[in-house]
Image 1 (cartoon, rainbow, N blue to C red):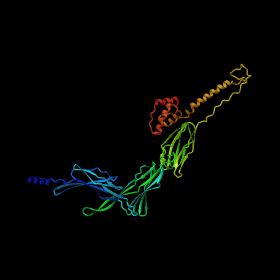
Image 2 (cartoon, rainbow, N blue to C red):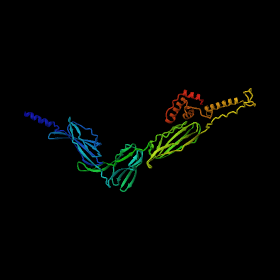
Image 3 (cartoon, rainbow, N blue to C red):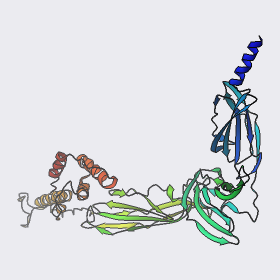
Length: 479
């Protein structure tokens, strides 16, 4: 038995082992100011360690991680210690819950910890300051307002590097973002940035604080007591803002103060020639909510282009094609004006377009023939009157024939075929489209017109059956 004790002591000396296993957690600071980083350290003792997955602490992402391992032998006892560091930037006070770590096949649990985050001290001589300002606190849905961001840096404050993180603007349209403006204000250099925004929905919307990360130089002592230069990062946060958004009154979807105009590139055109109309809307408001201004005009084909918005101006171009005189109707815009607190409307002028060669429709009238004397001879020749003139019968016949010929000419329109038109070709889709518009009631022609419009105005491809196109040309004598 004595020999057995000596053998166990010798084995213990030759093969040291871990005398304990466990996990402890700690913070490098339990109370910090907003903008300062905190490091959570997990000290783990044991041989076989499964590292925990920690990506978020205090509702904020972990910025960086590091690991250190040390081995010690004290009184023939072998100890392995691992330190896991998690660096994060808390934005509010919180409690860090217990963390579980598997060590040597056993689950070890840390104690929960509390962390206090105090508001950053906004003193007059602070090195850096970041603020948010809004020109309006209460707005309507779609009403533009300005959000101003100011970053102030004291002249004697040094910054090695910086990184700006914009505020969260969910629920808002960003209509415009100005270029940064820099100027001097007392002992500070001020950088100013203006966002022009509009709320997308009603309710109380929050604009979260903006963040500016500043890297500055600092000196720290190393393990030998020597001062060493080091770059240290610190974050500066702005205030947050709450915007109260009200719904638009009435049945309008636009808000602002606008004017509208419509102009034509010509007022007189040839049959089936296009006249181009440009509509412009100017003013401050939610122009992006206007989808199209395309009107519907009987007997006129209208083709519209995409709306173009440049700052406070909206424009849309349209082409009107017809074979008879027509009028472009007035374009109307209805909106809520926040200045007058009333629903208002504006409209453009009507534009009359004259088509060359178009004649006004005349009412056909037939005068009654003078009554034939009842005393005329019974055996009078039907071909001549009793006075040797043309019989009324033949006058009526000639009139009916002339009337029939006039109707045929109006339907056939031979002058449109001899007016010097170019020969039709599928390679010239615009000329072909204008020519076929006169026969759009024909189902075959309607299909060809749809294909041509898709090519001209939607960048489509032309796939026209040449046999159908040829039969249309022959049917209407198109050359």
